[in-house]
Length: 169
Ligand code: FES
Image (spheres, helix red, strand yellow):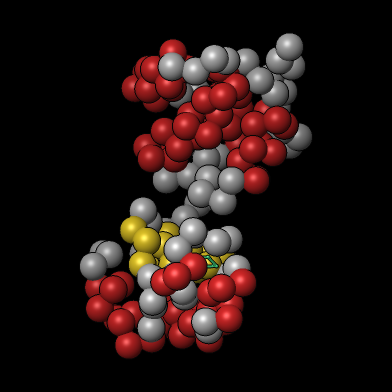
């Protein structure tokens, strides 16, 4: 049985979702055996609208799904593509798992950091890019890999960075 929704300690929560977000989440729930199974989809729906999932959004989603905030937060923490902090307009995720590491992911990270003028985990001053690490993207045959928003890019080289990032204003 689901636990009742609980607030995150110290969070300033105003648990509200838009009618559109609520409708989209309810539509996901309708296709699933239980409401908790819609957790990731629900958070992605809200993230698409708001750019990230704040504590208040998390609490609102948990309440709608009839689960605890803590349980939903643990799913969000486990799933790399849910952003629990504000991010830039575009999110660059560099794979740091074994195949990419062997193929120069660490060097690539430094090159991307230099190119975007930020460090891993940071957002550029103009709010254009956030750089984050990610585990294996399932494209090891094209290592090193990265994702920019929802685009998977393989065989990444320093030479192509300028051209690649130009497409994300
Ligand atoms: S290790 Fe990077 S895509 Fe698999």
